[in-house]
Amino acid sequence: MKVMKFGGISVKDASAIRAFADILKKDPEKKIVVVSAFFGITDHLRKLTTLSGKMIPPVLLNRWTSLKMLP
Image (tube, rainbow, N blue to C red):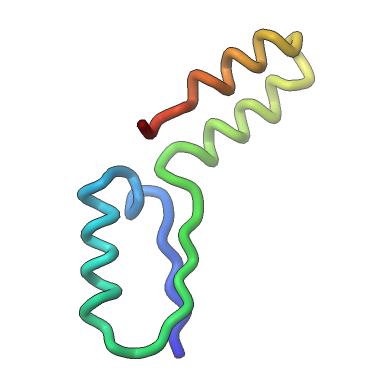
């Protein structure tokens, strides 16, 4: 059994997700698949963590809602 992890650039958009799905389909071996944060999300979360101690909650909330990258 394999463990395969995809994240960051490998899940940055629909085309990249299709590419890793094709990789999974081509390999008949049983596997566990882990998908981590989409491209850029970890960096945004780190920034929010840093900013959360310095900003008032409404500003932080606006920053969070601006991160909605997917439809």
